[in-house]
Image (cartoon, rainbow, N blue to C red; front, side, top):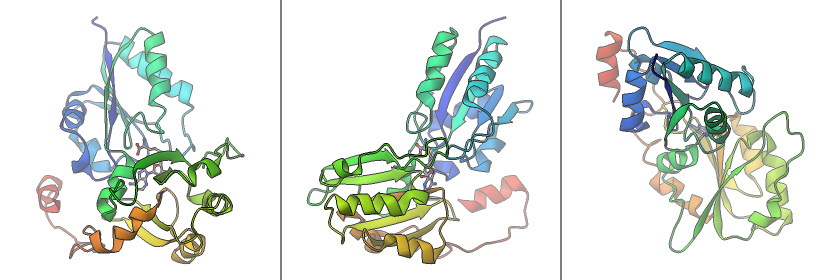
Length: 271
Ligand code: SAH
C-alpha cells in the first residue's frame, strides 16, 4: 500500500468562495476530510462520493475531540494510504494548532503539505472595509489571542506592550475578555477614543458587527448582544469602517431568501 499524505488546509474566514483554488481542489480529491467547527458547510459538499468526513468540532478551545486524538486520526488515515485533508477555519498556522499537527505528522513519518487560508482578521478587515495598515494611521498589524480558552484561566498577554506600538490590534478569541482587555489597554495609556470594531461571522450573510471606542465598546457589545466567536479590531484605521463598509451595505445583506431549486442550481444563484 502506498503511503498516504495529509494536507493542512485553510478554509478561509467563512464565505465558501474565499478558500484558495488549491484548497478547493484538495477538498474535491481527498479520501478523508477532518474538519473543524468554523468551516462553512458548503465546503463539505465539494467532496467526492465515498469521502469519509469527520467533524472534530474545535470551537475557540471547546474541543469535542482532544488534540492528541485528532493527530492520531490523521496519522492513522495516512498510514492506511489515504489522502487526508485537515480543514481548519482561516489559516491553519494562525491560532489553529497547525504547528502541533505538523509536528505530530513529522514524528510519525507522514508527508504533509500546508495550504494557507485567508485568516479571520483579514477576512474581517476586508468585509468591514478596514485597511489593516495605512500610511498615516498604522504601520504594523498584531494578530493576538484574547485567550477565551477555558483551559487557560489567566490571560498571559501583557497588554501594556501593545498599547503604544502604533499598530492595528486584531484580537482573536477575545470577546468574553473584552472588558479586561480594553481596561488593560486603557490603563497602559492607550487613547480612550481609539476606534474598535467587533465582528461576528465576518464574510458570511450572517455577519454582525458593532463599532465603538476603546472606552465604550464593552457597553456597546453588551447592548448589541453580539456573542463569540468574533474578531476584535482596535486601531485608528477602524475609523474608515463606516465609509468603506461595502459588504453590509449590499442591498440584500441580512435578508433571507428562499430559493426553490435544487442545491446545485441554488448555489449558483447565491453568488
Ligand atoms: N485559524 C483561524 C483562527 C482560529 S481561532 C484563522 O486563521 O482565522 C478562532 C477565532 O477566530 C474566533 O474566536 C474568532 O475570534 C476568529 N474568527 C474566525 N472566523 C471568524 C469570522 N468569520 N468572523 C469573525 N471572527 C472569526
